[in-house]
Length: 399
Image 1: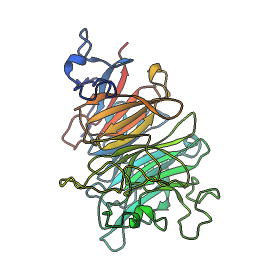
Image 2: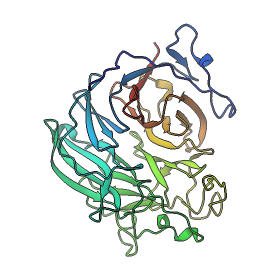
Image 3: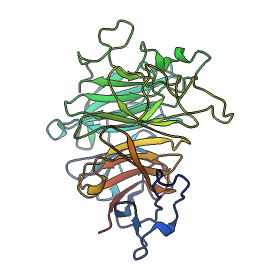
Image 4: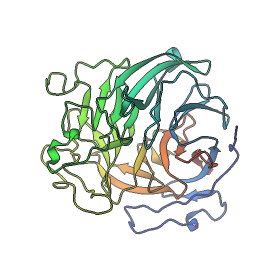
């Protein structure tokens, strides 16, 4: 069924600055009184405009040069959205996907030279030959005539597990054409010896950031290329479940947002060879019981996050805004929240210290992805089921 919601506007709630008033709760009173569809934030008034429904648990979004959108659905389909309508037939040519829990078809990215080579990259949960296990993998193919052609695998994580969670699986390219891929810890439980956790062991791809050439080969300057005990694809390690990833368009810095357990979601600036501490350090506790997990909140040789959320907002997609539609937000980091059902706007100073945080969207649904559109607006993907009428929306200036 094809649905179009391009003319639909949906009410949303805007939070006050979390730094200024941590106990403030958003309410419809925050909306500008002269227009019920216009909302007020610290620096910009804006509208929330629904774009489309007609999807099922969408996960990743990319903009094609012709104006179409490519959207992944976790159940294993790649869809095209054209003029606010979801085309009926999914894109053909995808590999078999292991669907279940948090696993399925996940992120989508375009090659930096897409307009010349038409290469599309997809991260997904890959099934094992045993029928019992899966891992995170990335394929690429030429997108032509609503189909992927010449599909090839460019990365398979050594992170096999019978579990169906914590795949990570975001993809981003930097200005030099290197490809970064996040891989989660596959829900490996911390034991008594926290430093023996697989995320602290570089002989596997559990809980790591990967850096590769666009064809999947390993760059010679990766930090562990000469370490016989480490896998050469690893760029950083000690991660739990990074579900947001972006490269700053101006500084070329790599940033990601990472799920903590019950508390301790992180915003990290990713540096080569660094250990980001999971599960040795952090702010989280065990689900339900609330018992301690970590040795401490920080330790020598382990990187502190730039920011953390305790309690958790279940961080997801991440975007660094550089458009001209919201000039006061240029350089700010936007992070979606699943459990928190919110969009966090984080402002940093030149030393990467947080100087402000503001909640822009709350209680509209689980925000799975955040992207800056070619129109300069801020686009959101909502992780709703097929029965919901809102899956993609955008924020645009009120004036």
